[in-house]
Length: 264
Image (cartoon, rainbow, N blue to C red; front, side, top):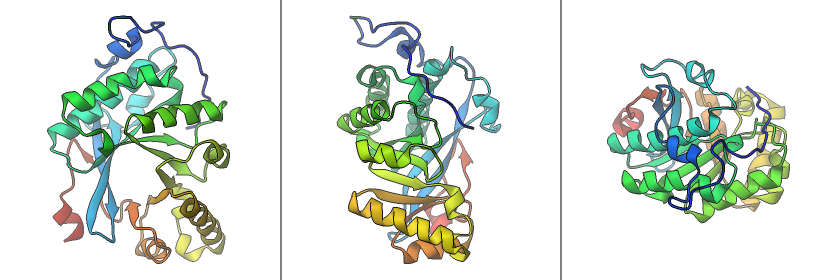
């Protein structure tokens, strides 16, 4: 789904002097409607380890993501975004996650990065989850009307000690322009490039171009949506060690896939 990002003040107005957070951020710790998360591992195939788990929003009983996302609108997206961050961290900590945690965020729900990140910082401290093990993902498929503004959000997140990632790279509208303003820690290749890459000369050429660019910019690449051994082997041959997809493990609702089950 493609959203147009409208950069507007968050509901609730300016941050209060007492907390340094706006009303929308404070209320965001309590969700407006019930939801939870499934966690899908991102693997380091060369090391034989789980590099991270991506938090994927689900209904309270494991229903698909759209049952939750269809309830998000302009009036509640700020609160929903804050709730996602806090609860993804809370559940990951309760599960004993020792890997990195990758969280998707809504850039249109951020009006001042240095203020809107405070709830996340407090949650990381409260649940004992190290900041340097949290990755914030933003999808390139969003129609970003202000690339430098998005770059400023990601820059603030890096300053706070978080890792940053552009998801679905190669599918959207502003990926290359965004990289000119900001270099994330991680780029996740879009699944449309990954699919059948081992048999598509065009996909191979495009992918190799992205890999060379990321190498020059010191950006780590993740191949996501890997479903076949052929796709896996192509990326291993090209030096990509981080992968995610059904070939390895599906998302688990409020649970983590054991390393021994994945690697044997």
